[in-house]
Structure formats: structure tokens, C-alpha cells
Image (cartoon, rainbow, N blue to C red; front, side, top):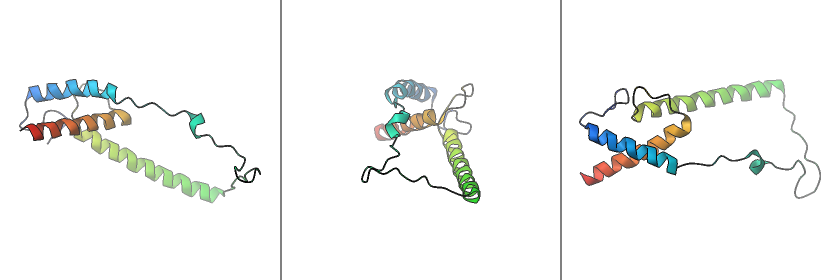
Length: 120
């Protein structure tokens, strides 16, 4: 149990220090390059026929329904990240972790805890 993201019950300060040192080196090794918009751009012309693609027209009701679905999806995703942030250890004075920082920290933390279990 991490409580408020501090030391787990039964662990010692040295374990946390080793973990923190490993996190900061591993986070830099896990650097993920961001995709550029041009990597995903598709031409408005159909590749097979050479004709221009027809733009899909949606009603305002469909758009509102899609917006509601997207808000629900994002709310669910944000809740999941908040739960994950509470599980990974952080110091009280640190700023709130971004999504990518949370994922990277979780990866390193799982690896660290696996090493501890395997070595004990």
C-alpha cells in the first residue's frame, strides 16, 4: 500500500532511493518521439479511382452525440490516469505527472518491483 504515493509499508529508504535513481535514468531512455501531422495526412483524392473523395456530411444531432461520447471517453481516460498516478510512488513536493510521465514511471516501477521480487 502506497498511501499517498510515499514509501510502501515494509520498504526502506534505500529501496526508494534506488528506485528514484533508476526512474530518472530510465525515463530519458524511454523518450518517445512525437509523430508529425504530415505522417498521418491523407490526400483528399481516392487512390484507386483518382476521383475526389466526397466529404461526409453529419447533422448537428450526430455531432452533439459524438461530442458527448468523446467527453465520456476522455473522462474515463482521465480517471484511469488519476488512479495510476495514485499507485506509482512520487514525492509530495513533485508536480502532477503528465500522462506520458505517468506511463513511463509505471513501466519503470513495475520493472523495479519485479526485480525486487525476483532477487528476494
